[in-house]
Length: 182
Image (cartoon, rainbow, N blue to C red):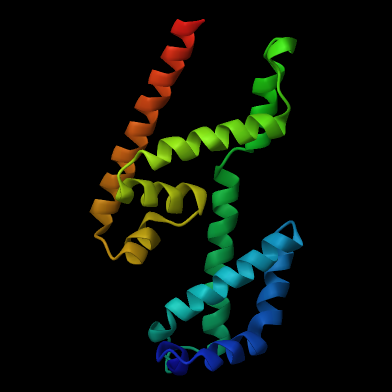
């Protein structure tokens, strides 16, 4: 871990060779699909790389440290999944409630929604856009986003709040415009 903290790339490869299989097995037991487990393993090793300087061999063995980071990451991921509603079922319910002539396929609807979201995000100031993308779309906690951006946590929280309010305002404005046009 000291070599990783010093920026030695071969040390990261050695860490992965040594613990990658173990971390993958644990991730595969907790996560429903292999691709999710593979993504989690990658994210865990990035996190290990980012926190290498915090490892203290006097307090824990390396395997204990690796599994602690893995466990925390997997629990966070499971919590985020359980809190968020399943978007496809909500979208399908919304589409089925439309009259037949207005119904679109789920992929068409998702593409339209994603395009609209990208347009709205592009109009936000950079900090607000980045905070929303990282926290909502990439699943990072606000504390993680704060560290990534090297910005105070309060600034990140404020940027998130202001950005979400702007998105809500734009959404209401566009819904009103659609209603007025019909």
